[in-house]
Structure formats: C-alpha cells, structure tokens
Length: 432
Image (cartoon, rainbow, N blue to C red):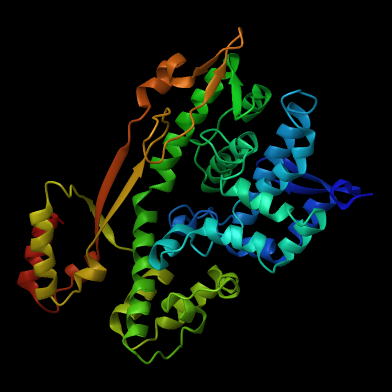
C-alpha cells in the first residue's frame, strides 16, 4: 500500500475540550504530529502574553493546530465527500496543510516577529521545504508534495478551494481559535454554532460557500469574531504586556550592539541580533528559553533591561490611558521632554500602542489586502455576497475600528524620591 493511503491499525484520538475528540486515522498525519518541529508547538502559546490577563490562556499552538486539522477532517470526510465539486485526491493535501499551517510561529508570535522583522509564514514554508523531519514525512508521499503543502499555506497554490478551507474570512483556522480561545480565557464571546456552519458548507471551484439557510449562523460567527478581538485579543492589559516584551527584546539587542557585557550572555539570540537568523536557530528558540533569559536578566547591571524583565516576570505592568495621536501629538512631545527631565527614558517607558481590526470586508478589486468575501449559495444556484443579504453584516462591512493607548509606568511617576515637581507635571498631563 502506498504511504499516502496507509491507515493506522487502530484509530488514534486526542481528547479535546473544544471538539471532544480529534481523530487520526492516516499514517501520514500521525507521523507529522510526532515530528520534533510539530512537537515544538507545545512550547509556543497560542495567545502570547494574554495569559497575564486571562489566567487560563496557557494553551498552545499545538492544541490549535490539531483543532484546525480536526475541523478540516470533518469537512472533507463528512461534508464534502462524494460531492462532484470535491476532488478526493486533494484530501491528504488539505489535511496536511491544515495541521501544519502554524508550524513556523515563534515564541510570543507577533510581538517577536515585529521586533526582529520576521514572518512566521516564511518559516512555516522553510520548515516544510527544509532539511526537517516534517519534510522527510511529506517527501515520502512524493518529492513534490512538500512544495504543494507549502503553496497552500502561502496561498499561492492553484487550488483556491483548499486554500479557502484554511485561510479565508470563514475558515477552519478562525473557527478553531475563536472557540478555543474563548474556552481557555473563560469568556462567552467566541461561541457560535460551528456544527450548523459545517453542515451548510459547500465546495465550489474556487472557494467554500455557505447555503443561504445558514446565513444566521455565519452572522453569529462574524459577531463572535468581532467581540473576541476587542474583548480578548486587543485587551489593553495584554497589549501592555506585549509592549514590555517588545521593549525587553529591543533593549537586549541595543545593548548587544553596544558591546555591553551581559552577566547572562544571550547566546540563543545572537543570530537574531545580527539579522542572520537560520532555521536551526529559529527552531531552538521557544517561550521556555525566552522566559529563562527574562528571569536571568533581572540581575543585569543595565537598569532598564533589569527593570523591564522584572516587570514582565512579576507582572508589574504599565498603566495606560486613552490616546488620540491625531489630536494629542503636542502632548506626547511634551511628555517625552518631561520624561527625559525626570530621568525616565521615554523610548522604553512611554509607548503608544495601536490596535486595529476589520471584522468583515467584501471584495474591492485592486485594493491592498483585498479579501475574498463570504458567498451565500441561493436556492436557484446563484451566489450572493454575504453583506448583500445580511443587514447585520452590512452594518459592519468594510468598517475598520482602531484604538490607541498610551502606556507608562505609574509606579515610577508616583515615586517621590526625586524630581517631584516634574513627575507631578507628568501626572497632571496624564490625568493620574
């Protein structure tokens, strides 16, 4: 029997709090889960610094990746199987892409990427195509198979239908993380009727469409996503923790460039600080390693690095206030000057952070970041864009919401040991 068609002697299951059970029958999927590159995802949190706000948010990219695989497995095995629009030979490609879609995420994901100007999708492709255990498994299917999987994840594949299952405005990725993140954070916002959505999904040539009868379930899904972004993903406390995390990494890199003598040398960061990151170095760095350095760097002679690490490790986070950069730029400039006079470096202790989300958008040809819309399949076979049928979705379509916060260390400003008058001026400007 060909490796691609090989089944396990006995089905393997993972007990899961969201999907109850995750089923693995295919030898390829089981072998991929066992690779060291996939097991590394156990050491990468799904929600970055959100565990400092919602104490239950300790779940990993490993959990989520299995969840996305399970949703896609249910779609292709239970919903699409036997339909003329679905090609059964694409099944294994779809399952592998779903399982591996987040393989390249680094520690603390997006915050880490911004500091070092990296892209986890590039590393996902590098892991799949490189000299890795994952590549060896995929190559056993066919020498071209790793490239096909990488192209689906990169959204460059000719198979738009498979891409849309994993990356679109209603995909398995979002359906898993909304429910999983809601479960582990303990909030009620992310819940929607996934069972109903799966039942009304239909394959088309270029994308998954939704039967008109399932429109209200999709409305609920979109509103759940909207609420999760503003109540969980953009929570100001979590964002404040991200600010400190990024400032620690910026400070460490700055000190390294200045030939600072670290008590605890950042050997795992050398290639990152030198902008020469290899795949081997990238895979060695996970959140346990980063937290080790933060723990150790509390003892550094550099007061800024030591203080920021202590704040992150011990959750002594910055406070924040609402801020409008368009109207308050003069105030920010004045605060910068006063912080310097007070002996507090504004580069690390006065930070504007912005959050922005577009809950749903329809197709606008030629626009940057154009999104393939969700289409409803009408009874007569016609496709109608969702916001043309749904008043709820129409009300939020194309409307980007942006939020700005100004972060600062209130404890240093309330400290009366020095520069009292200047700190009082700062507190007055910040209205604290």
